[in-house]
Image 1 (spheres, rainbow, N blue to C red):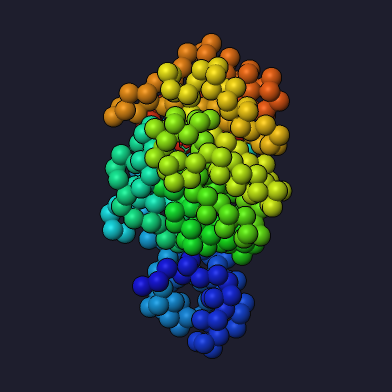
Image 2 (image 1 turned 45 degrees about the vertical axis):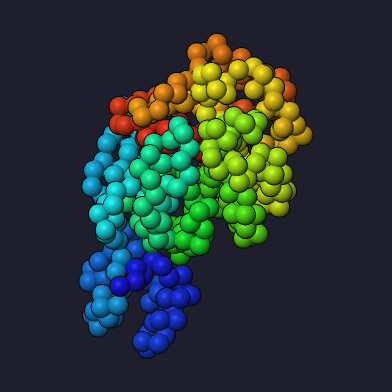
Length: 343
Ligand code: SAH
């Protein structure tokens, strides 16, 4: 059965019209789901009983279940979700003063095999549907009170731009006033650099934030870390990001995971400033979070600071994330590091 969250409000209005109900019923139904977090049609008490039954016979809602929640010492919460086919995915809630950012997964597993990433180790299982992504956001929202659920980042497991149609559908619902009502500028898509996906996203007329996992300033190093670079090399990727920034009027963020002996020396910093020259972007440096199946380690403090300072000197806007609280699992740490600043 179809999940009702796959429909836009216009789609739901069309279904209701066919059934002989007026359009305002659609707002009531989505009000229950998106504003009150109610997934059970039978409990939608302001709807006629017959309509509740008809909905329950035609749609499902809320197929993603919360299996477990881990709370870190620093307040970050990691959610382990179970899909209806029993696959597991994870999401993270990253609190700031009065607000919470939800970091959500777009695929179960991942195809892209970045060497330092735990998600790829499991291989690819399947794309998540738009409704499943929205479910993740809704579950996280229901756990954030009294803080305000304010930002969404597509930075959990999987590659969002490899699941494009579902991603866009989820973004539109998360953004819509009849949906979760999160402003486009508070929604971030993080990609390993799928150029055609970035190009399409630039055409959507949505001002969503783009984060690009760059992690190296030259093709040799990047291809060794991220096989996707062989298909979409750095020069083309940066050109595409410049176009995205110009078209959407958003500043692109480049994620740069620092790995000792691989990409963190001064020469790499200089190369990075050269390739980003004249581009009004941001660089987010993150000391790599060690993954047990892979030997990479973060560089020492001095090397990290020298790298950062070289970028600052070159006029690049840069933030440095400190690895914190790995007490709720390494993957959570990885996700959180990236998005502390958004919250
Ligand atoms: N596929 C998307 C989104 C998921 S990965 C992308 O590549 O951007 C989210 C972020 O976590 C990426 O920047 C990724 O490079 C980073 N990441 C993965 N493993 C990490 C690790 N061990 N330490 C630090 N960051 C990591």
